[in-house]
Image 1 (cartoon, chains in turn brown, yellow):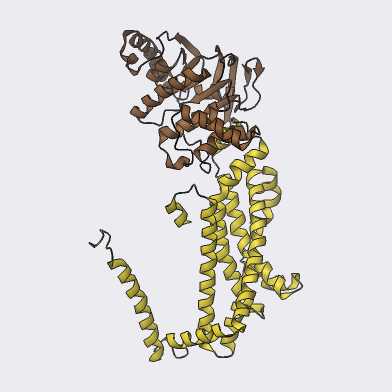
Image 2 (tube, chains in turn brown, red):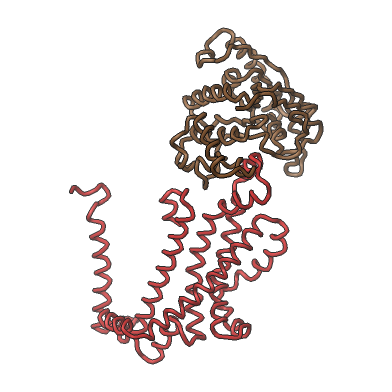
Length: 266
Length: 265
């Protein structure tokens, strides 16, 4: 599968401003982050801190007001299949079967029907969904839908996979299962993952590094290297190293949450 | 077999009894010439209607009227479907199309299609084409509006997902916009079919020489009242069959929708 030689995200001095109700809102300011190929980086912060905006800039959904975003040296100008996005929920095409959804990117590239079915099945088996090829998304549970979402991105062999709170809408048990599944899939494909979350346990369990963001306008407050051995078991969250990292991040996130609330005065 | 919690066999029985009651009331109202402000002296009994229906079904003229109406409805409906869906997709997706094409549609929409009958007779050279025009108008507005709403209601996240999977503009239109708007389009077709029957019958009654609407109106003129009711029933059955056909085609086109949503549409 993917070699892992590509997938270097370079975000330099990124600034993003929105116009909302006639007022200019500064979502992100002077945000700088580099990833190494095959790395999992979590963007963690209070809601409204601009972490999804950073991900959207890498995806090409929003244009930077200042600074640059590049992947493997190419400036991001528009959305593309080299930067696949897994959304929080409801992003599968309801009118396409599981197979049709996973084949979508290959169809866009002009891959023939037989070849794309074969490739799609490979990735469906990677996420454990063989046997559900002909089901429609509406017939699947939330966790299964997200697995289709992951397969649909990976089948394009993207340089990076961008995940925007992909497990945020799932119940706690399913979320843990999905986190373990993501790590086992990542061991196979070694794609760079940029993972947006507000869940500290999730960020620490998955990531090589956790970027803790400030309240809006979002900047990086702390970049935490997570040196927990891989493969990680679910029980890793009960180890002293994990607890220490969690305590450090929790303090920072709480401070930023308070700042985010006080900054919302009209 | 034990009765189901919701009443089991009792519910169908009640429904059959309800229809039976309707016919009993009809029968005695007409047999006794009831006159309680509403007057039943001239209204045919169920049996007279049945006899008349049997007589009509044996003759050829009746089928000629049905065929004339069906031809007009399907011609008008087909034109409205093609125009309505095409314009609706353009107006819903492209701002330029919305600004240039939508205002005249919004301007004309409040005018009921039947009000167009005199103008339609002046506009079109033949009676057939003027009636088809009225039928088209009736179906066009619900189809175009529902298509526009369907396109505007498409989840922007699905468009983003498609672009981040490598879809270009044409592919987004084909793979996301059209299927995304389809449930709403089918609703528009279903409503449009109903409206176009109303328009057809009205137009045929006003200016026709053939068709079920003409058949019904002429029967009144020549004092054949049981034939009037046969005409009414024929219109009802044809309208019902047309709507059922639309729903059937709709289901076939949208296998992803759960059954109960489909039944609602």
